[in-house]
Image 1 (cartoon, rainbow, N blue to C red):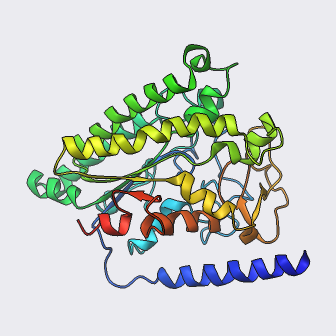
Image 2 (spheres, rainbow, N blue to C red):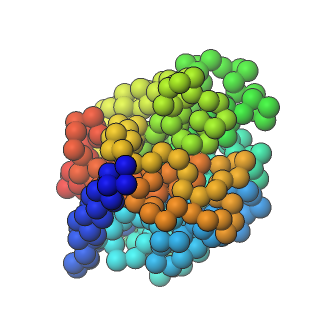
Length: 357
């Protein structure tokens, strides 16, 4: 067993070094700007000043991040950070909470821990910025760009060249449907009906993003929520490796996303929406033999206990806390989203193809 762990660690280190070699920035970014929408999987600090339990601006979060604790829900980089590196940005995209007029033309990160497609999602944890509010904030950003660039035609053409990443929906299950004592959705809807209602609302939100000038839009599906350490701890697995009832519910949402992306492309011929199959990508790494438990001691809500001891070799873990991937897992997700290794990973194209369209 010890030799197996050493060999696996060696493999992980080689993978990391290979990936770091990819992140050498040469010249200017491949796209002029990069906008990020979503939840804690891509939040880089928008929740820091909110009154909420859903914030990660304390150690041991950020232990492997160059700037230390920033509000990222992981030990290092988020998947959005790594995608930014692959796009050749020399700095991480700033949060909406802190972005300046000098930075705004490079992009903005609007993501918020505990946020969902539905406005009420995550409310029992405190403040959060729902996707509707993130879109409102993006409207403010576009208005600022119009004023700064003083040319609406130029700004419109500029925005069409940018990459937009949207990674949201997990909390609509974790911090909504799966918490019947706080929310009524599981009493109102079957899992099939809930997925349908969610996707209907998500469709309007993605169309809103299009109306605000976005044309190259990356839509992430949901990962295997039933395989997260927190959900396994809460619900148990009946001998399976994951909580299959949760994964089945999430699958009904994912199964509607790819047809939605196809429909949006058909209805908006100048747009290029693409679907990233996060479940497929996540399950690939779960088959590599790495550890599936949390790397830190977790609270009841699945986040790290402040200043807790953490696992010494993070490269051997998929999850940093009860829900969020480690830096190495985020790197795998981001690089596979950028350059798909299987037709199942991205449809109709991966991010590397999207930027060339």
